Image (tube, helix red, strand yellow):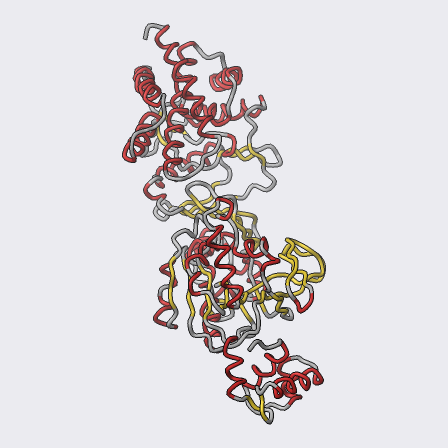
Length: 591
C-alpha cells in the first residue's frame, strides 16, 4: 500500500528505533506532536501499528521505500579546480582529513546503502582501489571528455530504481543518507540575496515546479538527488529517447529533468546551512579547510614553491585559463604577484621538443621579446610565467602594432640563436597528408592539385637558399600580449625551431588574414625598406605553404572527429590563392 508522507515518517522512525513515544517521534521527524498523533491513529486503523509498534503489515508497507543503491558520479574533468585536477580527480582530494569520495561511501554504508556504483572517466585508474577497500563497483565512462554527465547515467540506467545520485566531490558535514526514502527529491540550501546557482520554486507538497539559473533569496540545488522507482523509470525513457540527439551531448542530467519538469514528481529536500559543501574553487576549499594546501601532496604546488620561494599558504586566486590545444594552464597569485602555471597535456611529449622550447624561451627573454618567462622544466614540460594583468592581444590590422610585430620577428631571426629542432611547412604538411592517407583516400577534389603545387613551390623556396634561423612558428596575434603600459610579449614558444625566416610571416598572414597591402606593409617594416621582387615572391610562397600545411592539419582534425570551424576554409583559401600566385611569380621570373 502507498503511505502518506506523515505515515511514512512515523513508520520509518519506528523501524529505526522501536518503542518511540509520540513526543520522541516528533523530535526525530520534525513533525508537530498533533500531526504525529493523527498519523499514528491512521497507521493503527490500517493495521500498520499495534500498541505503538510496527506490525508485519507495517514492515511490508515500508519495504517499497527501501533504498536500492547509490550511483556516485566521478567521471568529470573538474576543470574549474585547476591545477590540482591536473594531478588527481577532485573526488580524491583529502578535506579535513577525509578523502571526499571515501567519506561519502562511508556515510552511505552507515545508512545501510551497500550497493554503490562509481562511474569514473578522467584518471579512472585512480579510483580502482575503492573496489577492494569498500566493495563498490566501478563503471568506466569512455565518453567523459566528449559528453556531459548524462553519459554516466546512460551507462547505469538499468540499475536505477530507488537510487541516490551523488557527486564524488561533495562534503557532507552530517550524514544526509537514509535507508528508506518516501519520494524522489533534490537537496537544497538557502541563499540570502542573489545567487548564480540553480534556484527552485515549489508548489503544494514541496513538489518542484520551476528551476531557474540564478535568483535571489531562494533555495538552490546543491549536493545529491534521490530517484524513486517512478522517477527512474520515466527518466530512463527520456534518456534513451534523447541520448543520441546532438543537443543532448553537452547537457547535465538535470537539464533533461528540467526540460520535462512537469512529467516528474520530485520534491525539494531542504538542508540548513552549512551541511552540504561544493567547492568551486581552491579559495573556497581553503576557507573551509585552512590546512588543505599545507597537507596537500602535490608536485605542482611543490614546483611553484621551489621556483617562486613562496609558502604554500600564500597561494591564492587560483583558476583555470582558457585551455590551448596542447596544454592546460591556470592563474594563481602569491604575495609577490600574479602568475601562470602551464601543465603539459597528455601526449605532448610526442609533439613538443621541450629542450628546444626552453632554449627559445631563454633567447626570447634575453632579447626582450618575452618578459613573461620565469622557468621551465623541459624534462617534465611544466612552466611558470608572469600573468599580464588587463592585457590585450595584438591587432594585426592596426598599422603601428603590425609594424611592431614584424620588428620583433626580425629581431628574433637575427639573434643567431639555435635550437635542436627544425620546422618546415612542407615537411609538416606531408606528415599530416600521410596520416590522412592512412585513414583512406583524401576526398577533396582539388587536394592533389594543391599537394603537387606545394611540392613544386617547395623546390623553389629551398633553391632560394639562406641559412635557417630561429622562428617562433606560431606567430600570430593571440600569442602577443600587450600590457597596460604598451609593452608587448610574444608567448607560447612550443613550436619554435630552425627554419625559413619567412615561416613567421606566412603564419601571421594566414592567421590574421592580411590583405596584400597589409602584407606589403608588414614586409616593409620587417626589412625597414620596400621588399625586392625576390623577397616578395619568397614570402608570398610561405603564405601559400602555411595555408596548405594548416589546411592539411584541419582535414586531419576533422577526420578525427574534431570541428575546426571556419579555420578550415581560411587555410584552404590562402593555400588555393598563394600557392598559385607564388608559383606564377617564380615561373614568370624564369626560375
